[in-house]
Length: 221
Image 1 (cartoon, one colour):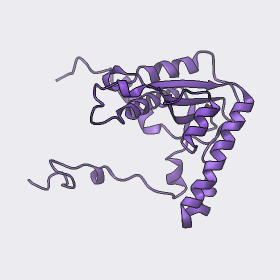
Image 2: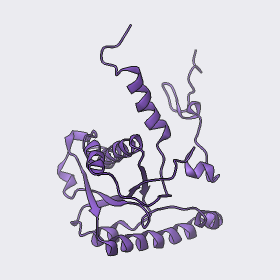
Image 3: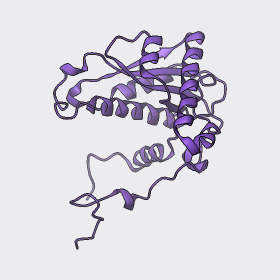
């Protein structure tokens, strides 16, 4: 039976293609975004779901080259600290390209608002749902950009307190992402970390359980 709420099949296919081909991009080529593109991506992000409709996300567009360079320096410093923390895999990690801050067309800092403790709806027992909500907004941004052929990289290698100060964010707010946005030569055929043999994507059957944690589908039939 046809579902009257479903999109036409070609639009359904496009949605799944964007999901399947979205990549965390690190390699960019020169070129500004087309007029209106960034606004469309941000509108898609702002249409994301949020617990209690709190809309905890804020997007800071970085236009000052000196501030962009300072953000890059923060990330590079954390990159080295991460390599130290990884121990034996540190050298392998340092060979990975982990950001494209100086090469991309646009840099955005995404942060959670201050005063989040006043939002109780859906957060009384799970206060971290503000972070989950902001992640949904970023995913919307990512998928909209991928549909228009624009790459996005989510960088999380930074000291939040120092990035907050650098960006003039209020006390109590929390930066959660530096987004690199721009044109790419091509999209990776698979996640970059998979191509670099850092890790692999787990098969669906490994992450799906039924009725109790660890019970595989069909195990009780």
